[in-house]
Image (cartoon, rainbow, N blue to C red; front, side, top):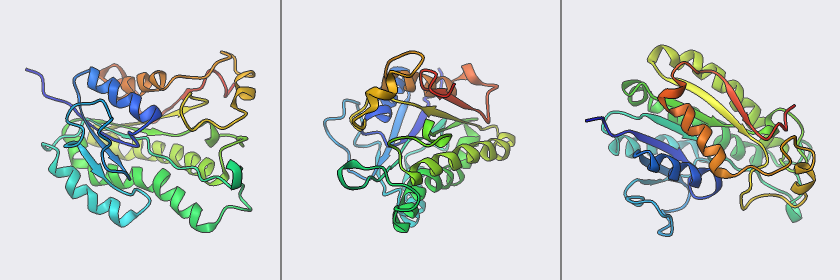
Length: 243
């Protein structure tokens, strides 16, 4: 009988995170979810409330303290950690916040959620990841490699830093038997799309928005045995937006 596999996912409540829970559940995995909010009973996965950990990833002390609660829910093994949570503050009317106008406290909070939380969680759970010969997937962004019309400067630079961190983590976690990769989504059809996204879509080689399920499939691939010799890379999931 094969062992039950377990994933820890941050930012599960909507969009890519929501689709990822459903994808791994379909494969028979147990999914632990983390978010700032308590578990929403409308989420359609079984055992969700028992497998949910409420954490404000913008608070480094709270994140480190939550590791104890996460470990209590694991049986010594964690097969996948997916760092999907991300925040991108906007100005009045949803305006893009550039590097001149972004408040220093917003820079700090964005980097705590988007950049520091992934390494705090991975480092704190390295024994469990190693015991399972598990995988880490960091969710970066197309905005990490170019100025984006909607994504703010703090968000973009945090995602660029997360890409670099993925490389460093792959180097450091590899000897523990843990693979670390990133995916960089482009324009995905979620509830947080900015007005004007349709103009970007017109320029994409595939000429359409991506679906959250298409991103979840790539996350699944990177956590499965199908990618057993893949580490330290970032996969673009963006209809050719990077070309």
